[in-house]
Image (cartoon, rainbow, N blue to C red; front, top):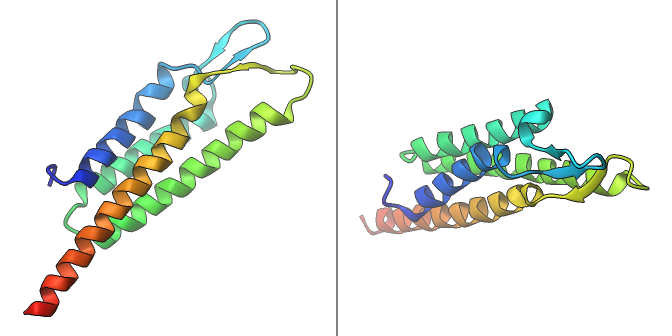
Length: 136
């Protein structure tokens, strides 16, 4: 059901993680070369997995509990990806590899925010259905 707000949030997450990391740079090397998600295999697989999980949660709208669990897995994946970015940017001292951080490093932060908003809306729907079932 695309008219639910969590579907909109999940669609935003799918676009954020499936499209934007390949157009926005993650960081700039010392040589001035911009690094995108498709330059690093692990990062691109993580972004694709996050997009697939968001689309999977989007199409499993009939099973709200399953949708909630898929979103939690996606949140964990994005937090791991964010941790990798923080490690990569802070661990290398003396401008060894990362010269300038790009806007693409913030994509997991926005994804986690939208996934949390989607989970809150799913929880609200589940509570509404439970309250209606009690009245029967």
